[in-house]
Image 1: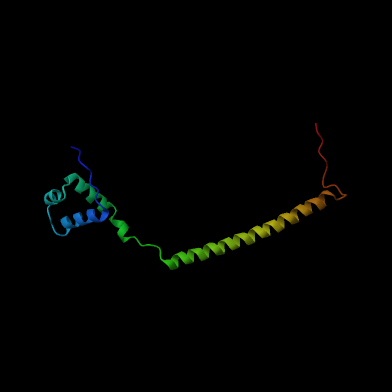
Image 2: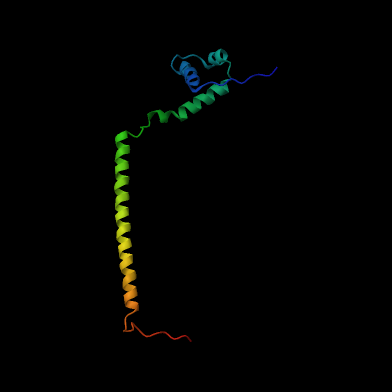
Length: 114
């Protein structure tokens, strides 16, 4: 006869761990009651304690997110202004090169091929 696997939800696992930690119910009694292996209980306990810090981490507040979005918008505007200035400078540079290239006075001696 095949044994079907039971799946405990996260809430059920925490409830079982809480019975041991807060109510001082021995692990052997919990394992009998819920028909689980002690190694499984200890694995749950390990995961619970390793991830316990997540419960105390601060979630970013809405004001912090909106401040970051404002900062991003300001930086994007600044970058766009710089791009426009660079485009103007490049246009002037190209025009200047064209004018200097057509001047009648040579800028220097031409190189000869050897």
